[in-house]
Image: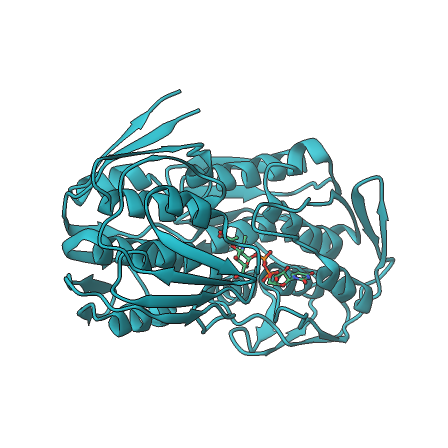
Length: 419
Ligand code: EPU
């Protein structure tokens, strides 16, 4: 297993370009199953998660070609069964359920298990499918959905932790080929949902309201092929902005949609970092006396749960006491114990982390536990004195395209040790 070694304390400067969004690319690739015709998707990041998704599509019968960031998928024939061996590596594989149900009117997909960020139920996805007229059974670890016919309906997808991103995607993908009109109330408003709706509309779907709490889908009989470029990854952009905050001289993040990261730039501004926003780039300058912060994760446009760990790394050396509350995945704090090994002072009280800023972190051997927690450890390593060794970096490779190379370009002393 590869490791990443970071010699901390080397200031970052210069600019990096953000890759295509992982969380847009995954459902958009799944959506290609909805048409018999070729679809071309640009800006697909080179990540293990996108590779897994292409393996799933190939297993389901699609012809898949990948050249650099461009992926072509032709799904002229499709199987409706995705077994455990094929889907177990990635929780987001659940987003093939919607397109398979839409296209084949049946699907059997092995259920995703929990993961280190907590229980990951899909009850809201299934409620949505049932509302469209599907019968749902969970048997032997598989979820089976079947509908002689899908019929538009009014569906509320808001759960106890707020809206569901992949649930909204899944129901939208099933409903595009249903008879009649579907209204999703309590829909997720994340930019990735809007990107998927834009792609589906290019395929001939009739979706309105994506990006608001109410999405209206008028079913159509078939979809055709389409070409699309996925939006920039707002979480990668946010992670590089925090890198710039944690030990930057002057870092510019390019190919970013500033509106998509507004909650992150607002939080960094509140910490005292000067931020300069242009059309598609954001620059961050250092502040020797970064302030503590009170932060709550919320559905978009609130502060994203996917940036919580990285902010904890930053706040671990900010002046004063920060209070971070995780409202989406209350158990998403695996990074806390590892950051404490580097000298951070943090206490967990339920879903809240209380962080007393310290003057310095010390490099240590730490273990990546999930994607964003791993990024937090790398960021802490950039700041820490001495060497930080992050093991199990396959978590990082799931969701950050060439993170170590991009940080090297900014001047980080970071190397990957193959194992
Ligand atoms: N939830 C339910 N029932 C459901 C679905 C979700 O109770 O049927 C709960 C979840 O347990 C959670 C909340 O609703 O408390 C929101 O979960 P959501 O369904 O929105 O998460 P997701 O769609 O499975 C996507 C991203 C995650 C990101 C979350 C929240 C993808 C592939 N994944 O997951 O990204 O954290 O939305 O924004 O889009 C990551 O990239 O590191 C990552 C984990």
